[in-house]
Amino acid sequence: MSVARDLRVLLRFQDFRRLLTLRLLSQGADGVYQVGLATYVVFSPEKQTSAAAIASAMAVLLLPYSLVGPFAGVLLDRWRRRQVFLYGNLLRALMATATAVLMVSQVPEWLFYVSALCVTAVNRFVLAGLSAALPRVVDEERLVMANSLSPTAGTLAATAGGGLAFVVRLLVADSDAAVVVLGAALYLCAALASLRMSRELLGPDRELVQPRLTAALSGTARDLMAGVRHLAAPPRREAAWALGTMTLMRFCYGALLVMLLMLCRYEFSSTTDEGLALLGLALGISGAGFFAAAVLTPWAAGRLGPGRWIVVCAAVAALLEPALGLPFATVPMLAASFVLGLTTQGAKIATDTIVQSSVDDGFRGRIFSLYDVLFNAAFVGAAGVSALMLPPDGRSVHLVVTVAVIYAAVATAMARFERQ
Image (cartoon, rainbow, N blue to C red; front, side):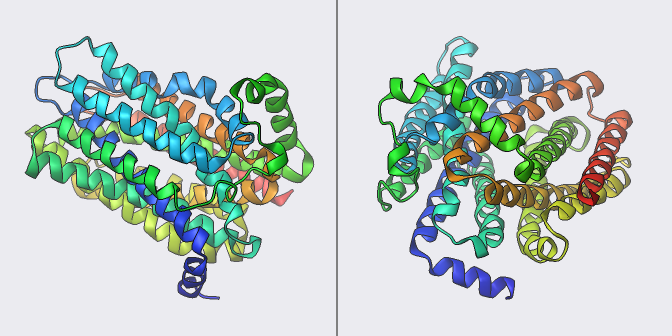
């Protein structure tokens, strides 16, 4: 069955379309909000940004919720996921509005980070819940295609939201607060979109639901250990390997993103607006790589298997990342953005498919929250390593070579596992 025909079949499922609409609005809002934060922290003319400052911001925003993320997974396996999407997006709309107010107020900077932390905390529930709910709206035969379309479409929506934020920031209102308010409006739209689905549709099964917070949290430690044991069992060993592989690839992507931020800010541009426009172009080209991964992955994973497709993605990144990155020139760096978008998203689609098809529904919420925690921790770790290795202008041969070595090691280790 061709990709186009599979897409048409998927979009005939009403519940899949509704969940996809929710994802697009939610992740589009994420893109707007995150660009608003990035331009405030990195591209404000009055700030002298460094790699250490970027790393500190990432740590403040992501690391604390890497510690509590597994609790979100337990709750997603105990609460109605539709309600999580409704109330979670309403709360994000409220807190994003608070972030915008703090941006234009004379308040201590830590208050700004607290409000951003609250939005990031709810993201853990929403993103993990979207992945956990997907098998409830599509049959197993089309799960690979659904994983190609849905998460990739969400990533593209986040990229489009980021592009919209750049347009607003550069052409409409020279205000990061205005961008964040736009993100709050999109979060509100996502909350309203969730009302189009029934309360029971997205799971978990009725007998697993525990609506009271105290009841849901009482067995958290036991439930988390059960989730880890479930993942470690032989039938799901490939899922565990895929999660580890994807974590390392996320580390590489995060390190290169920090380098790209610094290069756009200082090396490739002479003004903040020029650097901001170049960063927007690079992210847009990376989004094109995400789209290419959505088209290519179903065919490639069908021919090779999801695990071997991850091997191919890591190997391609290991070869092309240093070839395109080491010149430290604008055009090769933009080409590298496309390659990394393609390989990272291709590996993620394959990982999502392996995890969803291996993990029972009663465990999916906590496993995808663990997945999310690994993503955050890898990103923060990458930012910290980049802060140590990057010079003020962002040009670091050592960082580019280190990332290439990690990609090669990932490809080699996953290939050995697949042969076994």
